Length: 117
Image 1 (cartoon, one colour):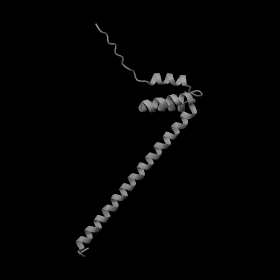
Image 2: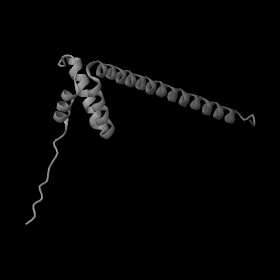
Image 3: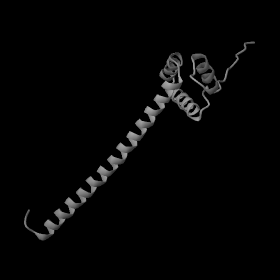
Image 4: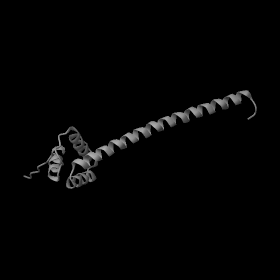
């Protein structure tokens, strides 16, 4: 530097500000990582519950639904996990029961009858 006290003071302030910004970003990164880990743990727990309460056929049907309609598949997974955790599922859900559950959870579809005169 030029040795000017004002320049030195300005440089110190810049470095201090940059350090504060780095600390803030680091803190936000930790919070985001913690949130990500919590979400991953919740998903792993949900998968464990599904494995325990679904037969292979029901799991395959649910995977097929999830591949074609991801949002609906996620909704069904959450519903099955909630039913299992609340104790409303006795034993395992087989493929036929999964079909019935999918029919119940499927949103109402409008049908149009077109008649020609």
